[in-house]
Image (cartoon, rainbow, N blue to C red):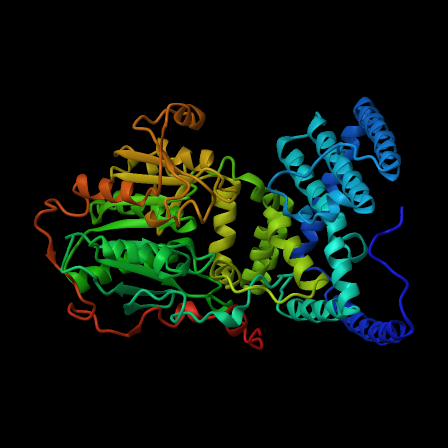
Length: 613
């Protein structure tokens, strides 16, 4: 079959192509030089490659012990190849046979009509999808592998298959071929230039540019809710937001965001800002803005994050508005820290400092961490620990690259194609700007967290974690808890986060939102999207909980507001609200306007590299 869309070029076209090919060759040589300079992986990278090799070797051994599975897969693939050849012959005869297999409905790689209408691309697509299905089914059928090895094998095999997609190559992607012919290869020249820029701004792997970063300025069109920095230490700046109501609830609200990314996922813009919505509901809102750490913060521990984070913030809030108690709202790893903090305060007889605690997409029970567990086998973790010990921090760009591989086609290959093959400038998108505005992780905290939480799952053990000489126990927590998770979350799987509901002895409410790790949490009521499930009972099994749960339209935010007000956590008497607290009116001086300087610190600036462009 001849590839469509290629006509005999004119003499002028040939001359133009010669010039472009020279430019492409030069860019290619320079790019190869950049790649060669990065060929040696880090200590952590070596262990990941070794784990990939070992997982694939274990898969081959499992196949050798069950040759029937291999024979069955080969026989089926051979039959499908015969059918595919017959379809090709029918297509050449002018017929339109139904495809043997079709892409998944959500698979955006093959949306171009050429994949369905032109025999060349249709054959490529069918061949790839059949091969992909064959590999997936073969891996799933393997018996005798430990669960962790099976999970790793499935992940690495999927990465290899995704990388082999015909959409990822110039000559087998119809959109790229059209663009290349139209521009006489200028798209490839532009694409290689963008690839070299991204390589220069990456730590390991390739952090593809996902958005036009020049379109956003922190404090101008993201992180814009008005407020003031009223306290800071080596690790945090505490922001107090300006009230928008004349009266407010008596108990202040402290938000503990994750430090793996920056806090403004909760304050991207006015129409989807959880921070602004909480302020508008009448809460006195305070928020922790974590520092972007570097080698100097290498020795910071989980206990330091607790003491200099929520505990210091609570002390500052008491100075700002005279209240000894707060309602905690936490997200992701910030929620894991919040649970540790509430347990610590409980064990030191200060549990009443927290009237209620909200956990958004938070893991406390790490027995099933999901696909991210692929990067946390013992050999990989040991390599990462050696890397952390040598550097003093984990570069946030490495973490971002790893997380993107959990959804490789949407978060890596789609941008690879548009940026490097089509030569397109990424569009401006605030969520993707936030996603690429990463933070480093200090060695002392991150290595301890990965081993004690993810690997050994000590947080759910009574006394399994000791902080500043105090053994903590989540089962002793009597503070009322509100858990909200997201049904399609691939970072904090909802049926894993549900395990946290079985731990505290105080009252617990669990809510399940629609969508994923971000959209399921950042879901403003005005959008009326996704919906959420509720169930007053809390059986041990998450599946049993969902089976008898009630689906509700819209956002979970108003449900939370009703929970925190009707139970008296925000104010014992909602009819007797207090005058709004204005930053600076208490004992704390105003240090600088929100969002403050900590959130503006980029990884290149922290590490003393040239600012990224």
